[in-house]
Image (cartoon, rainbow over all chains, first blue to last red):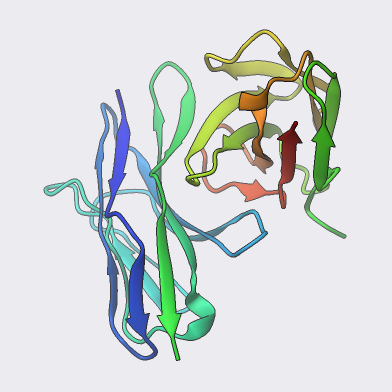
Amino acid sequence: GDSVTQMEGPVTLSEEAFLTINCTYTATGYPSLFWYVQYPGEGLQLLLKATKADDKGSNKGFEATYRKETTSFHLEKGSVQVSDSAVYFCALSDYTGGFKTIFGAGTRLFVKA
Amino acid sequence: DTAVSQTPKYLVTQMGNDKSIKCEQNLGHDTMYWYKQDSKKFLKIMFSYNNKELIINETVPNRFSPKSPDKAHLNLHINSLELGDSAVYFCASSHGQDGGGYTFGSGTRLTVV
C-alpha cells in the first residue's frame, strides 16, 4: 500500500540555518504531495503542495520539489526563524479505490535563537 | 469566522462513558474527515464523508460512530470509552475527494481516566 517516510526528529537548528526535512513515498498511482505544519496546540495547516512530477511547491520561504525518479518531496528553507519551530508532516493523496491522504510520522523542528 | 471548528477543545471523562465531539465547517467543502493523533503525533484516518455519504471507514472499533446531518457537519460519537481512546481527534474538510489540501480544526484532546 501507499506510505510516506520522513526523517526522524527532532531536528534542532540555530536561527538563520538551512533546513532540509527528507520525505520519500511509495504509491501505486500518481499522487499529489503535501507538506503540513502543526504549531503547538493547533491543528495542521497546509504549507505547500505539488500535484505532478517536477512541480515545485512554495510558501513562506519553504520549498519542495516533486521528484518522481527518486520518489521524494524534501522540504527546504534557506534561513529558519524561531517562529518556524513546529512539527512538519509530509503527506500524499492517491486514488486507490477511493481517494485517501496518508501522512508521514511528522518531524519536530526546534529553532534556537 | 473559524473555518473548521470543533467542540469541545478538551474532554476528560471516565472509562465506560459515552461522549460526542462536534465539527462544523463554513468553507462550503463537500468532504469531511476525522483523524486520530496519538501521543507520538502519528495521524491516522478514521472516517471520511462526501456530501453526507460515508466513503472511508478505516479499521475503527464499532464504538466509534460518525454522523453527518449535512455536508457542513460531521460529528463523532464514542461509546464505552477506553483508556486507549485517549488522543487528540482532528476534524478536517476539503473540496472534493482528491485531497487537494485539507483544512483542519484545532483538535479535541480526549483524556479517558
